[in-house]
Image (cartoon, rainbow, N blue to C red; front, side):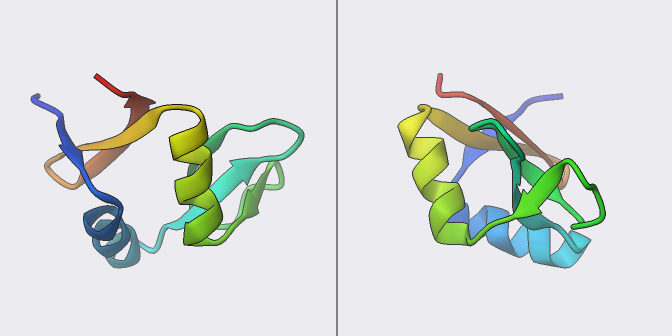
Length: 73
């Protein structure tokens, strides 16, 4: 499975289609996608999500509609 780097706009479309929202792991600076039903995650704005990705030098990668947040390559 080849993971391709995608921009935030494409990630937003995929997330919307899958019912996902941007989230932050409570008590950390970790970010991930969430359906908003996990007590360990807080739903955050896309703007805050993007800021966290940039601060931590992370990017969103996708393959077949499956997204993963990883260190920039």
